[in-house]
Structures are given as structure tokens and as C-alpha cells.
Length: 426
Image (cartoon, rainbow, N blue to C red; front, top):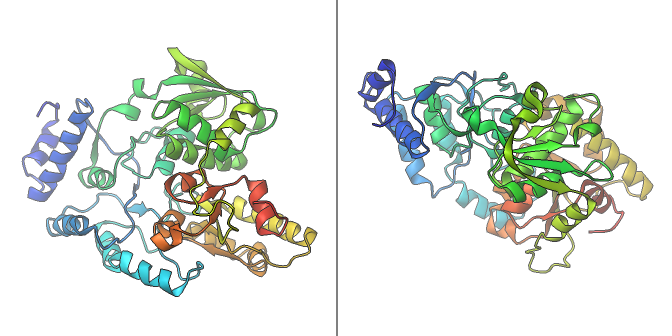
């Protein structure tokens, strides 16, 4: 092996923790060497997060691998959360779609049992926003993580200041099993330097999902340093700013491949080091109202009938925060009254983590949202749309991540609100 290992790491590679863990270790070493890593560093985050949460029947090699890990005692050294479940009976679907779901995710129950043995925190640990306070998987500044899930990784890196590469599924689990990850990329000081300076010159605060999309498509996997956005958040990195950056980051990570961004005077490393994080040779990208309009108009519509009326609306990809749920409840209620309606005119699903929904249902807002006809669920909208019959439906969303990965059509929050409450448009 080219990588320099400590005596303890070498011993694990040689089988001190058993043959199966040795295979895990060898995989991590080869993975690291592929990206030029010269060493492994300890995982210091308290919990892991895995992206492969869905029991697709065709993923037989994964289930076989997990069985081998369990049999060999290669369990996670830390509890972990997982991406959202793919199924929820409360989400609108017809009988034929349900039959396809049952066939597609035929291994869901057995796979969740495997995950429980490996180290899944509990039966409610399924969300892409694991870092929210209600969920409790919140790393500290500087923690080294072994996570996958693009929106969670970019949030942890950028808003929290933890360190994690954009790992693939299973690799992130291996890091939690071994307790080490390869040291390269976004784990290094050099890898966290920005190679783009993005200047925001819009007339108002841009839609988070649209701004993130523009930056992601421009910089791709590079690190952007964003200047000019900070003026819209005079109170610093409060809940409003974190919610905005959650959705912004998800769009940069899915419409591009961003794993880390810096926001001038706002995110922790930018507050600490400022423009010294920008490489001398960094490129500049100016975003004004016209540029956002151009980006928005570039989105293709892949519905069979571009003029079809929406049959379903998904909000919450990534999962919504408590503040978003309460804010949207107020907006929906007010808009329905204004438009002379009592219930949404398009079947609408708001998604959030099970722990967030549990707290939301204790509030005065939950019965109001229910009365308005909005379904709340902890489902993964993307996994729902993977059903080919659902993928053919004209679905609207406020998520640029869902738009990118499925046939769902993106609209701004204001446009979504108007459409679902009978104010027309869409």
C-alpha cells in the first residue's frame, strides 16, 4: 500500500479486528489512494449518516454485503442516521402505483432490520436533514465525518464547519465501521479554499433554490466563496439564515457537485478567515436578476404534456424545518382565505424528518395544515418519483434537487403557493 498507516491501522488491515473489517480497511485505503490521500484520519463526529436507506429489490449485492458485514462483526462504531424512507401510505397514490411500489421496494423491511443491527440509531432516524436540532445528529465545528447524502454533506461542511468529503453509499458506512477516513479533498485546508468568487448583485434576496442552482451549474464540484448575500442576513447565522442555506446548499450540490461553500461574513470559516479563503487565481461569477432569469428559463420541462395541469405538489427536498412548516401553514391558510378556498386545489405533500413532524404535531399549526388538506410525511420525494408511474405524472415542486433528479417541474415558492391555493398560474 502506498498510504502511510499507523501501527494500529496496519494491524487492522492485517486482520487484528477480523477478516471482514480488514476488507473494509483495504477498501478505504484503495479509495483514498485513488484520490491521492497519503494517510487516514480518525472519524471524530459523534454519529454517521448513510444515504442508502431504500430497499430496492434489485440491490441484491448490497444486502449480501451487509449480511457479510454483520456475520463478520463489522458493525458501525458509531450510531448513524439514514436518508428518508421511500414509502408512506399517507402520500397520494393509486392502486397501480402502490403495486409498483410494493415490487420496487420489496426489501425495505428486511433491509431496515439489517441497518438496525449495523448501528441505525432508531426507527425514526430516517431523514436527509439529520443535522437539525430535533433529529440530533449535529456535528461540531472541525469534526471529521463519514457521511454521504449530498445536501447533508454540503450543510455540515459549510454551515457547521465540519469536514467531510462527498462519499458514495457504503463507503460512508465503511468509514464508520473502521473509524478512519482517507485524508484528502474537503478534509484538508487546501481543499477548502475557494476557486470561485461569486458576487451577488440582485435587487432582492434571491430564491435560495434558484441561486444555489445557478452557482452549482457554474462551479460544478469547485468551492465557491459568495459575496453580497450577507447583507440579507443582518442577524448572522440565525435559524432564518440556516434554513435558507439548507435549501441553497442542496441546490448547489445537486445542480452541480458542490460539497462546500463559503458565505462572506456568515458561515464559520468565512467569518474566521474572510477573503483569505479565496485562491489568488479564483474565477469571478456575477449573479444579477438577469442571470437568475436566464438560469430559470434554461430548465427543461420533460412532462409528456408541458401544458398539463399539476396532479401533485411536493415541498421538502431536502426535508423542511419546523420554521418552514409553520411559515408555510400560515401562508397556505391566508392564501386559501384570500382565494375563497378552504382546501388546497392540488394534492400537496410537505415532507420533514419524523422527529420534526412529531414536534410539529404538538403545535397549533398542525390541525390548520391538516384542515387545509396538506399531507405531512417523512417520505423521500425522490424515491416516490422513481416509481415510473409516478414519474409520468405532472408534479410540481419548489425543490431544485427534486427537479434535477426526477421529472418534477420547479416553481418558486410564490408560484407554488398560488397554484396550490387556487390563485392559478402553473
